[in-house]
Image 1: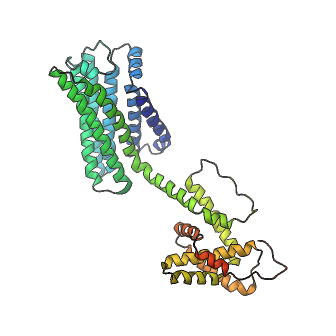
Image 2: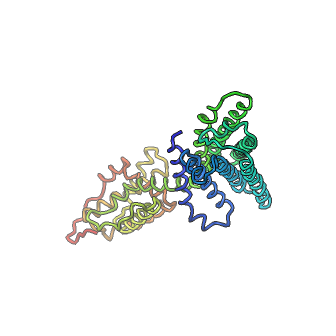
Image 3: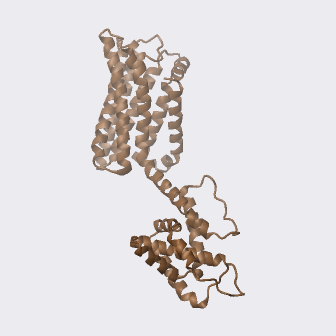
Amino acid sequence: MRNSDYYLPAIALGIAFVAKLPALLRGWRDPLVRSVHFLLLTASVCFFFAAPPSITAVNRITGVANLSGPLVYNIMCAFGCACLVLIVNWRGGPAERVRRSTRRWIAVYGAAIVLISVLFALGDAPVERLRDLDTYYANTPFIREMVVTYLLAHVTSALVTCVMCLRWAREVRQWLRAGLVVLVVGFVLNLGFGIAKLTAVVARWNGRDWDGLSTTVAPPLAALGGVVTTVGFLLPLLGPQLSEALRAGVAHVRLGVLWRRLRPVGLAPLPGISWWASPELRLTVRETVIHDELLKLQPYLDDRVRRRVHDAALAERSEPEQARIVGVAAMLSAAIAARGQGRPPEEADQEYAQAGAEELAAALAAGRERLVRLSGALRSPYLVEAASQAPPPAASSDATVM
């Protein structure tokens, strides 16, 4: 693997950790929040210290050959523990049971970290190995046990979390289920990493050289597995927000037709919105202006236009709801044309204008989706007929542009 294959994931995960720091400060007492942040931190740190240049630097700075080995192993144990603890807190249940499971896993992996450190101190590994420490010292007393300890801890974490996620995925839906499925993929990759490493070590015990499993096959599995696992944990947390942002963005675009039709030419421009504004804010601003313009347009509404187009749509076997929206859209289109031609409302038409305003309010009562459908209906072929059958402009010398 290239050095960038380690450092790029480390940077990406580090950015994710920093971006979520405000949430950690606000919810420090929440075990789930702490678990998410600890997982991001350990994943980022693990990638950083596992890179060959980092291994060389740590060994040189400390003056201890191969000290990076137990350091990376301990970080990997911490990451495996973080995965288990996060799954336990994420799934929830009785508070006492969650706390008991959390403490048990922390105790197990804490003991593994201490054992790895002690075994390294007792062993003798004078020759620096940047990529094949596991297999090079596979038959060295204490170092051998250290390697097996970290591999068993890693395989156990991957296997247990994989089983837990599979069972839980059968009970949930949507983003949570998608996140659990991604997690299973990540844990299978991590499991493959551990099995490949362990197989290469066992082969050394039997006098065979299968080091390629450890130095060539395992590292890419670990790199990909770490990233996929982190994405799996973040997906249910960020997925709903991404869905809302996407829905807001699509609605903002679909409201563009109605927005452009309602904004008269020459009207003063709206205050600018910063480029980093969220899709929800942009949509809210657009909806607010649309509703303001609809209020200004009410005196020009004519319920006769709406009824005519509504009946024509029903005659063409349109769905009642679609016919209703198309009728209102036709009425709006005619009102926009009347205002643009400087045709003031006549007193005799106020009854139809009031009826049209009531129908417009009723058609939009269901909320945002109706407004989006109304925008789309402005492109309906029925509106062409409405325009051709609109009442002629009233002859009045007092006509004004609103």
